[in-house]
Length: 493
Image (cartoon, rainbow, N blue to C red; front, side, top):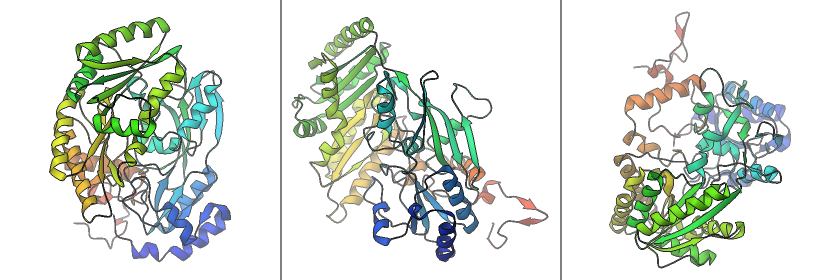
């Protein structure tokens, strides 16, 4: 992470005074013991106590905080529910954590336009809960949906088990309110399908807090389908399961969800949840089909035939919603299930072309032998988004570094086979130093030019995403006014 800047640390007394003048007492966390609660996100191998924490209660308080930080050149790390698995909310010793958990109001439910307006601290699950009584739901559903917030979902462009058919967060957002580093409040999109001009919604979704602070979100809600059924399909080996995935998609069928677990994860989940999963299988898939009843019944027959063609050893079809939810319960509990087997684990997140699934999974088995660490695989098979869980013991010297090297090799392999470094967890600090395996230097510089347009002094979430952060002047963004440049004492070339 960037070394603390003495000039910033020296501003601490003035920063506290300015914030106390402008914000109510409940918006500030200064106690050192209380700050420890914010020293990490879900990438729990890394900890750093922040300089202080600000918990604004309104968009206006966010704007005031950013103006003060801009004036004093203070760094800002945005934080939602703290569920980030890539270290996106890892604090800085010379920066504030701007927690958005108090911005948790559902502001408007508009069934006529099929949308809901919420503040960023509203959890993913709550959006579905507030509209479920009228037969609607919010489609993106990460496994952490009871805790992760919609603001964090936008920052990381989160997905979930139903993203295959219904898309990631970016496909379900209609409007955003953004506060810039200058404290300006901007509106993008709204209660309509299209917008004119540049696609700022697309730009901001997945921007990991580097461009501004989101303070309001308009999401699209969908009508619940007439029927949804889950199929549990087991295979003796991952190769058969991988071919089954490709054959289903190749047949023109787009399931609502298509999740896969290898034998290691399958055993862990069934021991943890005791749901009657086939523990002797080499791989198991959950395939959900939804829509009109006649359509779903027909698709189930087709998928069942494809499964049998690929040597399925066990097929179970849910008879009602309760049984469907039971089948899904194990998948949703996969991460804590694996946690019951290992003192620590590292959850990776790479995406690959579907047809490479068998080769990549077999390559991971060889890597597991090389590093002497077990790995369980639980992932979104339909869109090739892998979540390898590398098990290790952090109390043993060198094991965390070994697990990280193992994870880096997996992500490099994802890129080599035509995939990408992340599917939904973001880059953060976890994948930051691997960005050059996927992007050229000029690619990264172009991305940083966008960063400079929003945040020229790099105060928003520094140390994340970019392995080498250039000054804006080096990227052709130097402003000369009356023959003078900003910060003339800095070396330029």
